[in-house]
Length: 329
Ligand code: TYM
Image (cartoon, rainbow, N blue to C red; front, side, top):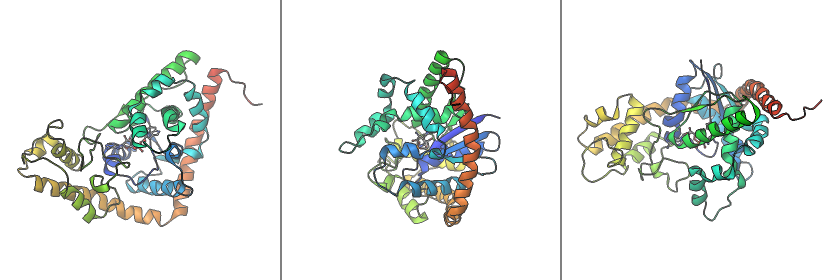
């Protein structure tokens, strides 16, 4: 049984990329592994500037995580800010990573350029140090993520190895685990960019709580190309290949095999939309139930916080002892 940790930010509605790239693996792993999943509200603070939003988004995200199938009896689902050890180890990690390493993070460069005229917080820059703390606190061996997070897991490994080298064996060295298909779901309107909450238009981003009509419309309008040949080639035919990947992740049939079954884009688009709708409908029904009972959600999160804190606190102490900090008596 592997120790697994992965987290998601409460920065907006969950989309199909989050689901196929990460959440599906979280759910399928929960019965064979010891799994921890965090709603990382401290990370979301890097881009939060309005009061009263983050708490609602945290609760909505909790409802989504339970609705997709995380079972609080076996999976530990917690809110990052409920466990102070994240901030505490986060600082130690900031002191274990270099400015140069953080400067090379493509996610930071991307986010910084997208925020052009907006406030770019120092937290956005030091973000990977807090992410390293999230992972290392739980002695995680595996981190199930989409492709875009691989660099953050790599830097976590580097930080952990540096810490172990400086202060003695303290942290488990984690590895990223990505799904065979769905690790990089692309925007339906711009299939050369990944599907993301931060794109300007919603037309290319399918949200888990979109209505069936909206989902079908987004797929029918998906950008493909003009030659109308269904071939799986992510470089030359990114739009068609993205649809085949989504259909493959939704049905379990390999994208190359699916390509052979279609001669027209129209049918591929509508089949893709229908497959996604049929996966999302039961999730939406469970979401509606869960979100109608906030006190039950709070209760589920508090059970998670107790389990997570017990482990995180021990690891933090181990790290402080390894450094040789004076304990409080
Ligand atoms: P976040 O909140 O952006 O995304 C959550 C998960 O969804 C995956 N994902 C995708 N997968 C496939 N295709 C896409 N278009 C797509 N977009 C998002 C992400 O790879 C991720 O697995 N920094 C992290 C949150 C985090 C974290 C952690 C993750 C904080 N601490 C510790 C793992 C371990 C993030 O912003 O994910």
